[in-house]
Image (tube, rainbow, N blue to C red; front, side, top):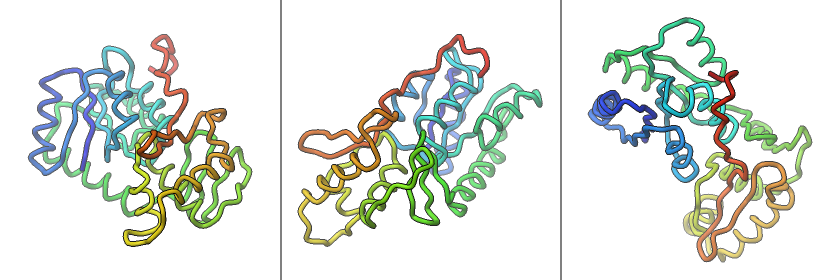
Length: 238
């Protein structure tokens, strides 16, 4: 698993990385929230390990930002020295999936991560949310602001794949292989056509936070047009 460690204490971050790497996980460390925000625009992680007190933004702000801009498909575990019940409740209500108090116990940390990842893998959510968009995987429907949007089978498959990987850049060939299969004899212009239809039907032009952008000669990315970091003066999220 590829795990993001958001921790400003270098010793603590190295300790977490050592434990996780020894168990076969890959890690990337971030000492500030800003660096983390920039990274997840481009990189897809399997789990976020998050300290509550960082030099720029609180854990509450980070959780809120991730849930609003990235979605609910990636689990968040708070690892912090704060053990007050009120803080634990606040973190869970804001969107954290687990809360572990320092000093960490390596075996407990790994066990909790295993359970968390297993739960996310085995219980795939039927409703995915990304901003004002709702993807109902049980009915294979996509709604915007509560309104069903009519899509063809391939348009839905392509939209679902992109909504599951917000911020990640995909080549035309990768999208073709993921949606149409590895050995199909279809021109990559088919991807361009479907992207154009999705952009129009789902209104992914940036007016509703999300847009489908193209990288000339390469491919496409579903990205938020206002990946704005939370205001440090917003005390309601601390």
